[in-house]
Length: 339
Ligand code: TXA
Ligand code: MG
Image 1 (cartoon, rainbow, N blue to C red):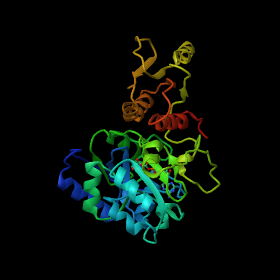
Image 2 (spheres, rainbow, N blue to C red; image 1 turned 135 degrees about the vertical axis):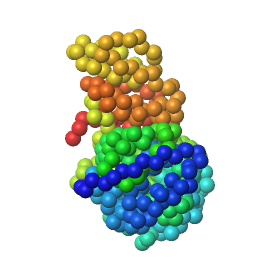
Image 3 (cartoon, rainbow, N blue to C red; image 1 turned 30 degrees about the vertical axis):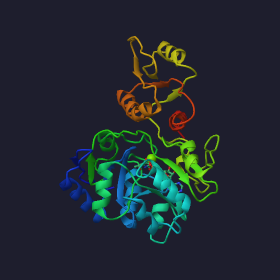
């Protein structure tokens, strides 16, 4: 792949400088790639209506082309053109949760290139709430296809530095709006099934969704699909959101696992809920006890521990249910062995 000069522009996350947004929007309009913050994680954006631009996302990420992208739009009115039918259910969910971290999967219209949807007949839509994403979408005037701005199968970025680490030399621009607050990717809900089905848990929970539309299908565990069958949702690929370092989910607080690794002479990262006294070769991180707090820190801490180059990451067992479902899901995937 040709080396591209990657320009980073720092923007105020609440009041992004219009000049910076203009520059980013010009890059999008000529078919280039711009990484930008959303309220969940950083996205890697291209004009969703331009197949060549979208193809470049797959190339930059090293993402297989059957793995569809989320299309970001500025508001729910922009959804109608992109879907066959904007349903009553979609309208209710959009009214309640947009702008925000909910992605809706609907039957796509002809306007959406096959490149975006991995050849499938559905499209995933989301209205991000982040002021930088909003400003970029409004200025660019086109829907923006954007997966998380990481190399395929690696951790999602919650800082511009994470984006730069994976994508420098492969994309035209990074809008650096600081740390994203959500920390885990959006909830993905398929409205093609009845009742709607949760495809990826996020901080918007199945019960919050069910309050609005009645019922949601939630697999006890997202089925892990093979790479040879068509993907229901690529988020269901087994190992995804993964750090480089082997990660072990403990039963309980993880003290025993940690001690065993330390005795083997290994350097150990530990995501724990209790303060730990200093010990050689141990890198403990005191994690927040709320799901929102935990989610906002999770990927950044895993990035850090990867950077330190510890030999193992031990994660204390997390609470269950509600918003913790998203965290449990990301941790479980991160703990699976590399294929
Ligand atoms: O929070 C987020 O959703 C972030 C920000 C940037 O918006 N984006 C993100 O994109 O996480 P990505 O590509 O890393 O994950 C997209 C997920 C896939 O794992 C898949 O589950 C789902 O969206 N997806 C996309 N298009 C789909 C479709 N047509 N049918 C089913 N699932 C789809
Ligand atoms: Mg991703």
